[in-house]
Image: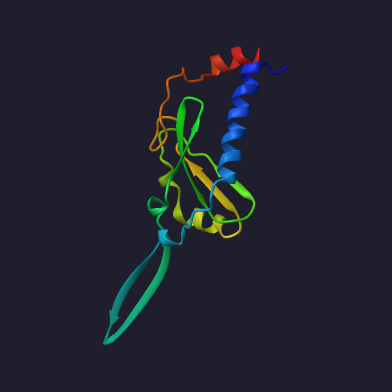
Length: 137
């Protein structure tokens, strides 16, 4: 059976998702940069242009949830996909090709975990496996 603390934590998470979903759509077209490579073979010059997504150029939105400010970015339109990074990795470390491909048909949300990048550490004690077990008992 779920206790009040577990329901509260889950409610905060849902509130964050709700706020992200309702926030204004950010234009990510300016985050694309064109890389041009010129190759010379004999006397012919060939120019190739590719579009790559630069995550650091997408504006970060900050939302207050509980005792922390969470920094996130929203890219694309369609059904929502929430990507969660591993420990000590910024949201800007996602593979731009992955984000680009997913954002063609989905709204992709990436964020910084607590105490990383644009998300504050907060003042509360962080949860651990032992604390989570106590909360669930």
